[in-house]
Amino acid sequence: MPNSVRVRFAPSPTGPLHIGGVRTALYNYLFARKMGGKMLLRIEDTDQNRFVPGAEDYIIESLKWVGIQIDEGQSMGGPDAPYRQSERREIYQKEAFRLVEEGKAYYAFDTADELDAMRARLEAANAPAAQYNAITRMQMKNSLTLPAEDVKARMEAGEAYVIRLKTPRKEEVRLNDLIRGWVTVHSSAIDDRVLLKSDGLPTYHLANVVDDHLMKITHVIRGEEWLPSAPLHVLLYRYLGWADTMPQFAHLPLLLKPEGNGKLSKRDADLGGFPVFPLEWTDPFSGIVARGFREDGYLPQALINFLAFLGWNPGTEQELFSMDELIAAFSIEQVHKGGARFDIEKAKWFNHQYIRQQANADLAPTVQRDAEVAGFDCSIDKATKIVALLKERVSFASEIFPEARTIFYTPETYDEAIATARWNDDAKAAVAAFRDALQADEGDFVAEHIKRTLSEAMQQAGIKQGKIMQAMRLALTGSGIGPDLMLTMEIIGRPETLVRLERALERLN
Figure: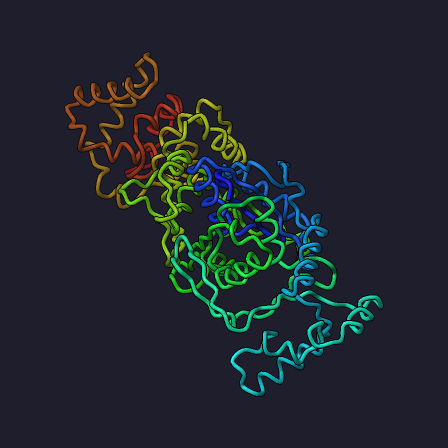
């Protein structure tokens, strides 16, 4: 086995990349970077019946968006090209035929009807498993039961056939999983899987083992759903003569539904009102649009931080990690065996934390755009001030403009409960005194100066400022709660502030 670590992410282009696939890619990436190794991207498209146009480009764009950098593979090139399995057909055929020649695989000519009949017989006999295996293969139509000349004649005549693995009848197959420890399966539980299909393309099992060997993959980090197939892959490594260079396996825990029972699906996400794909996806056949984390307003670094904790924990109290910090802290040994519950509220919490860390100038264009869509002129300078005022209160950049409603809209109504409790003679006098002070003031209309002007006006009027601040906010915004009032006034400007104070005096009784 080569000294340098090499991992691969090998999705199938059968639709949009599920968020569980993003987590698998992330763990591969973190492990490779931690170990100073490389990560490959391989497209496993041998099942042409399930191929979906646009899915491959979607996968590549998704990985780029979340910050997973591919070293070799599809879209990048590299010494083991091509990295799309449909372009490697001859490589797999060579190995499949070699296995037949060495007596480790065989040709099978059974039709679909004959296979169905076999399964029906076994089910009627209450057989433990209705499968093509070391026992049932001797009653089927294959090169183990047919004379050699018959097999040759069928192949020369162009009769359809597949190549199946000749699974041993009584053996224990073992592998030491980096997460789950030793896994032992008796060969009687492994059927004679198809390795090469009748169209000449390999199944996943043959293609993935051959490619992992030829691409010198040292660690296969993949989802738990592949654990039942792992013993079959161990057999293939042995049969192909590559047991000494077999990669180490690590099968990741499932992503579970929010309530914790069962694997997370798109239906669960739809019912819960959250996305399950990294990017928005438009189905090329139906035109149906599925939500994406990016379009819903999640920052890529927040999504990555959230996904990293779905199955792994650093063993410390730290929760916020940059990608470099995740790389430094990551360890396969700290990945859990049990499934991880997908808590979308925790994802929102992570996004809130990263929104708070964003530079105001980076979020300002979103606010400016949303304001202009709503029909308001909003300079980038004003948008930047709004971000500074409100980003601590939101989880998504798209929430800032709605939170800034009181900045853009002059109050037409006032909170009745606050008005009843706080709008009294002192409040009216305070608002009038502050209005007069602002009209006479010639200083810069910035938060600190506004605060000083208000304080001086209240002192001259003999009014305790603390008792009238909620009423002052009511006059300016129509509400009794909100962000820093001085900064709010700075943003709406002196003319609008005066308009609002005057209107409150006229409308509030």
